[in-house]
Amino acid sequence: MDIIVRPGDSFWYYSQLFHINLPLILDSNREINPNQLYAGQRIRIPGFIVQDYRLNQGDSFYSIARSRGLPVEAMLLVNPGINPNRLLVGQTVNVPLRVTWRLVQGRQNYDYSRMMNDIRQLKTVYPFIQMNPIGNTVLGNQIPELLIGNGNKRVHYNASFHANEWITTPVLMTFINDYLLALTNSTPIRGLVMANLHQQTTLSAVPMVNPDGVSLVLNGPPENETWRTRVIQYNNGSTDFSGWKANIRGVDLNDQFPARWEEERARNPKEPGPRDYGGESPLMEPEAIAMAELTRARDFARVLAFHTQGEVIYWGYENMEPPESEVLVNEFSRVSGYGPEQTIESWAGYKDWFIQEWRRPGFTVELGTGTNPLPIAQFDEIYQETLGIFLAGLYM
Ligand SMILES: [Zn+2]
Image (tube, rainbow, N blue to C red; front, side):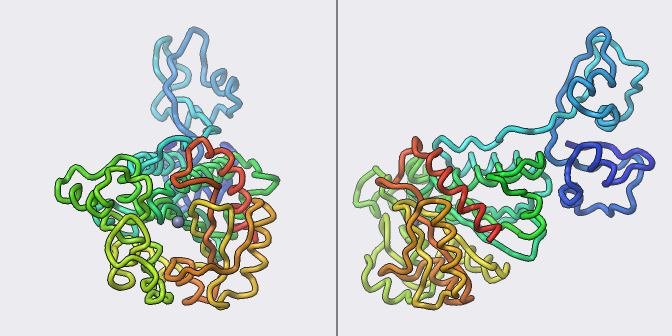
């Protein structure tokens, strides 16, 4: 919600007035010098929206504010230019409304356009989120990264590396929404105070690494005839893309990383297809390159890649992982019920490469059980299992 600064106002005053932690207000107005506010300036208050309200007989700013548990100053701030002593019946005024509900509706076929729409809405209500495009897909879709927090501990979560594991995207988006709600309403999640996490950590989230692949699974082949023909051919002539994990060029993005890539290639298909083809060389596909460049730029303390399925957490790579990885995975396991697995016969994945290059904790978390794509009916159960891992990844 935007408000207009009055003489003598300060961010601290707004923080007290709206019960929003000061760091969230500062982060929502990064371009503004908090010591040089001037009257008439427009600033953002996170966690609120403004609603229209038509005045009835007997309404005053005081009565409207009082009925909503707000100080009367809040009404003045969202109605600059309106004289509170000269209100007219039928006149429309602005009313601040604290947002206490989720904007993200995760329990549905959650494709790229839905995610982008949700990100736009979250950015509007929670302007302290930063959105950063990390690159474009083969089909030219922008891959967004969301950043939340100010802390030195940089934690990275990603989802939908694999197309038919797209349920991981609404699960991660729902966590982001719940985290934002907890921050602006000062409500704990599972007893944890989120303001502390916000100050200690920076969460980087790429909720959909493979938008083209997710679109293929959820919406079918692209309109473009060349692409349409190509993906059906890669899919062995079938128009059923429910088994598709790869990007739109038939390259498995989680087989694209230079961590024993040659061994992984040797045991995998040599042609583009729905899954397991790692390309002709590592880091050739734009989505994999974007993830590698982001990871090199950000200095992550740890990374968690969310996949489906199996209810297991892979935490090792060639004994290169630090001792901290085992401590973390035991906590992830405790809070989710998922089983820790140190290694499998698989290489060239994102977490493998992260552990190899940085010797820091990296995890592949396999959510839920069943056959991919997991039915959306599992959403609530998976979210409850994963919530503990999302939190532990930040507080541990
Ligand atoms: Zn996967």
